[in-house]
Amino acid sequence: MLGICKFCGEEKQLVQSHIIPKCLHATNQGRMVGINATTKFDMNPNAQNGYKECLLCADCDNKLGVFDNYAKKFFYDIIPNASTDISDGFNIYNIQSDKFDYEKLYKFFVSVLWRCGISSKRVDLKKYQQIAFDILTDKVQIQPDLFLPIICKKEVEHPSNYATGMSPGRFAGKYAYCLKIPGYEITIVVNTKDSNDPKSIDMYKTYFCKNCIKVIKMDMLSTVDKLLSHKVELNKKTMPNLKY
Ligand SMILES: [Zn+2]
Image (tube, rainbow, N blue to C red; front, top):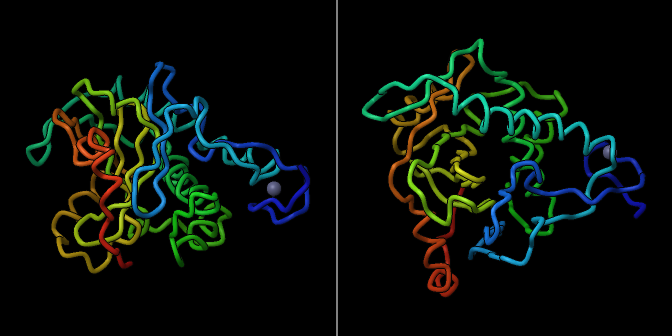
């Protein structure tokens, strides 16, 4: 299909690409795939390969694919082999700066949010959509105040562990997105400034920085897990209106 690539802006042959990278989808049968737009979890167990849309040309798809492939290595090779520790009362995986590529990983999170934002799923990042694009194209430097990921590794068996998707939420009074990939739940706080819990935000900033990454072992179900378990009930409700 010929169209305008959302990344380079040129008219080119567009390829079908996964909004949440295919290399991060579970191979397990019966997994759940969903990207939530605004008010409900959009669950589609039949979407065996996840949501695909023609948004990018092959060159740009490959550029972002570098971040996806790095994320796969980070989540399924580097973290499981990292040393464990206790930090602020959490059991964590502690990954030192020589063991990971901060920029690639940061841009992976930004790129997934950006892709959700340009997709038909209408994830609305408002002005942060453009900022995400500017970071991905190196027009704007990486800013630790923006797009702060808090990474949790699921240590308890539950069907929602195999979910792949993105849903909006709130963290410390700030707009945040929950990215689920198999075995992990990552909360990405869009803008950490002026939160109602600056102490926690400051702590989590030390959990994702150039010096080290601390991945929290999550040994209980999260709010999102519970919501996924009760998705029928959830669909009847609406999420509160969130403000940036
Ligand atoms: Zn392109």
